Length: 162
Image 1 (cartoon, rainbow, N blue to C red):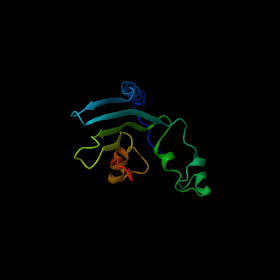
Image 2: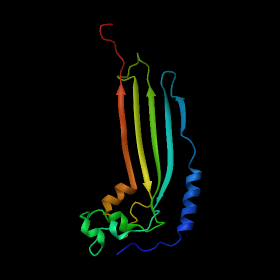
Image 3: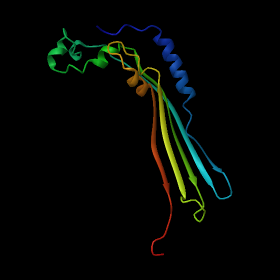
Image 4: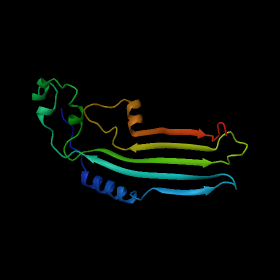
């Protein structure tokens, strides 16, 4: 009960490599000024990547009933091995990370001096492409379209006994 051979791997790999080369620019960043007193910076990093299975499946590594691997006791270790054949892509993603820092005047009317926000996201086109064990809709959404808030903080400078 192994995964079916996928067709068009060469074309797909070429498209992926071309897209990765197009997106392989360094991080983008710029400083800006909103008003005379408020300035900030924005940093964006966008990357892409892929993962491909390089070896054939081995029965001693597959813990499915009827294989030699079943007697090893690793009954849950076969899932990735059964899902992908040699040459199959199992990850094809674009991800981004963004940081925003705003600086306000220290003696201004706002209760904060600095505001920082950092987030990240990933889009993985192969996350749900499994043959042996299908992902639930919720698991597929989390694996293929993940958005996370890494940091969110504000700060205020002040002096104690000064």
